[in-house]
Image (cartoon, rainbow, N blue to C red; front, side, top):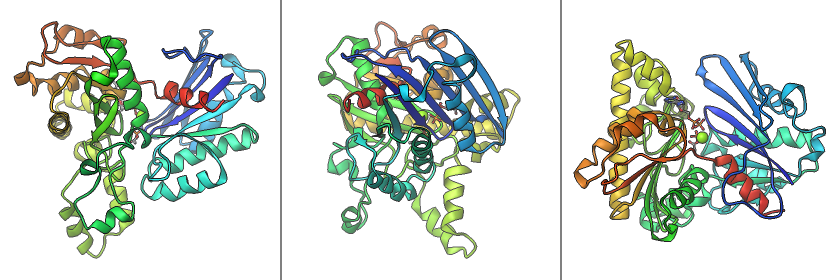
Length: 402
Ligand SMILES: Nc1ncnc2c1ncn2[C@@H]1O[C@H](COP(=O)(O)OP(=O)(O)O)[C@@H](O)[C@H]1O
Ligand SMILES: CC(=O)OP(=O)(O)O
Ligand SMILES: [Mg+2]
C-alpha cells in the first residue's frame, strides 16, 4: 500500500510517499519520494527540494507564491517531471497528516471526517500558526483525491497521559473545566525519538528515563519515563516553554496584562508579537532561523549573540526542570533542525550538566552525521542525536487503519 504523508511545520512543509507491505517494519523505510519546502531560510522565497528513491533530485525556488500554490507544486512533482514516482494519483491508498492541536477530544489518530475537520478548525485559535496550515493540506488532498481516506495524527496525543500536577494550570479551577490545561506538542517526534533511543541503547523503553529536546523552529522538551510523557514544556498552546525561532516561549503573564492596559494593543497584535515577532527573531532583529543567527554572530552582531545566549539559558533551565520531574536520567536526546545540526547548541546545553557526570565527546559532537551516541564512554548519561522521523511515525499510524 502507498501512504502519502503531509507534515506541516511552522517553518517547513515536509512530505513523503512510502510503500508498506503486510508486515510493518521496525525501522523507517526509505520513502519512494520525499519533498520539503523551507519557508524561512531565505526571506520572501520558498525553497522546494525533492528527491526520490531512484536517486533523482529536483530543486526550485519560488518568490512570494501562496502557500497552497507551493504545496500543489510540491505534490505535482510526485507524478510529473524528473521526480515522477507514480503514474496515477489513484495509486495512493491513504494520506496521513500531522495535526498539531487535537485538544481533549482526540487522544489518538483518527479518520478525518467533516466533524474532525470542524474540530481542527475550532482548535485553530489555540494553534494559530499550525492548525490552519494542517487544514489547508487536508483540503488540498480532498480536491485532488476526493475518495482517499485521510488520517489525522495529533502532536498532542503522546502527552495524553501527563499527570494532573503537570497538566493543570494553577489558575482558577474553572479553567480546567473549560479545557484550559497543558496539552503539550511535538508528540509525534518525541514518540519516535523515545522508541529510537531504546533501540540505539539496546535497552527496554519501559526501563528508560529520557529527555527529548525537539529543537526546530518550534521547540519543546519532553520528560519520558517508560515510554510515557510525564512532563513537557509546551502547554495549552505551542507558545509556552522554550525560546523559539519567532515565538517567545514562557514570559511573565504580567507583561501581557501590562500591554493590554495600553489602549492600542489588541489580542491580534499580541498574537502576532508573541508568535511571529519574538524569540530569536524578535531579539536579534535578524531572523528566527538559527543558521542566520550563527552567521550574524560571526559578523559581530551583538543582538544575535544575546538571542543565542537567551536560547541556551532557557534550554538549560528547561532540561533542569524535566530532570527534576524524572528524578534521574538515562539519556538526553537532541532532535529536529537545530538539535540535529547545531553542535554548538548541544555542547553549550550539555555543559551545564557536567556536575552530574554528563560528558560529551567533543569530536563526535562536531562530526555526527546519522543517529549517534555522542557522550564519552564514561559519561553518566548518554547523549543521543536522533534525526526525527515524524513522517515515518505518521505513516505507521496510517498503517493501523488499513
Ligand atoms: N545546519 C544547521 N545549523 C543550525 N540550525 C539549522 C541547520 N539546519 C536547520 N537548522 C534550523 O532548524 C530550524 C528548523 O527546524 P525544523 O525541525 O526543520 O523546523 P519545523 O519546526 O518547521 O519542522 C531552523 O531554525 C533552522 O535554522
Ligand atoms: C508544535 C510546533 O511548534 O511545531 P513546529 O515546531 O513545527 O512549529
Ligand atoms: Mg517540525
